[in-house]
Image 1 (cartoon, rainbow, N blue to C red):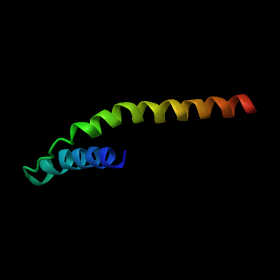
Image 2 (tube, rainbow, N blue to C red):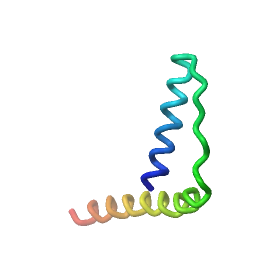
Image 3 (cartoon, rainbow, N blue to C red):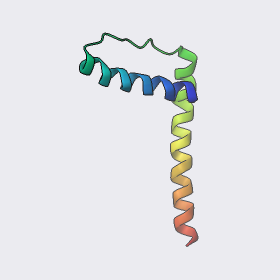
Length: 60
């Protein structure tokens, strides 16, 4: 998940820096295996965090 997060960070940074400085930097797409992993891990992390939030609220 770290490479996917770093890729998105680079995409956002370049989208901000290009207009500011007139640069033409580009970010290559990540390999397809990272996309496959991200489509499983990102929803799992979100659902896990939501489940933990619900469990904490019910435990009060």
